Length: 264
Image (cartoon, rainbow, N blue to C red; front, side):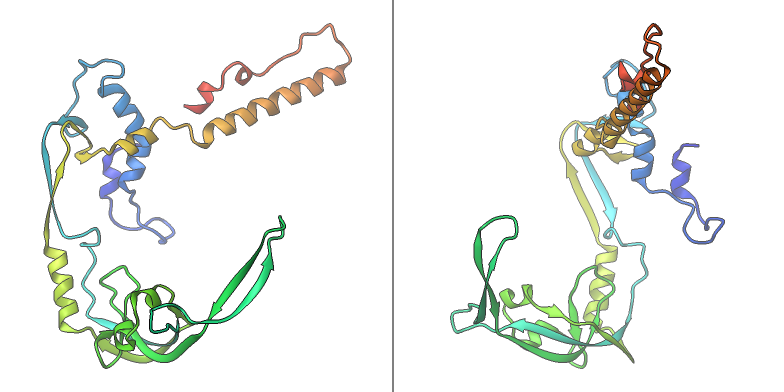
């Protein structure tokens, strides 16, 4: 069964492992090709449809509240993790300091190159993460500062900074007030997006051009259909040879003539 009702279901499945709900991409995968083909002028430009299903708008503003994770509750606490942090040393000019070089040869050619290893520093610290953001920024316990700021690292060192396997401590800290305030503001922020002229909308949401093209992409289905046709033909030929009766006509599978019906 198809329909937008799948996106609004609540509760859990029979095994109690996941929500009985599908995302918008699932809906577009089910119906996108048929809706666009039927109502966007490919077959009949005069065909009318409910605006909630498909429409064109010449100038549109999309207003939404918060970010993509606005439905998540705001986190005010964080677990403290003990971890080793390693970073490369730099000289006065900001370049990594070489420790030693290793000469290596690529196994598939005679090309040789030198792999350079840099001098490193490390430190054992207690850190915590802000779960209100989907990033890798970690804060130092007791200072409420980012780790690389407390260590005085440059952007170049931060990009190559490595974290060892962390060990969860028994401590829990409250997030600083400014991080909680930032999360509240981001959650309640009103975002207005301007769209180009003649924008297509499907099921009430903008239909991007790249997404439209995926409706007409064969993907792996074409390769599957070709392999299936070849497999059927080989099976028929083997049976024909085994029968040792060349007077009988050689059967070919329907896919040998056209695989189109097996793709769509």
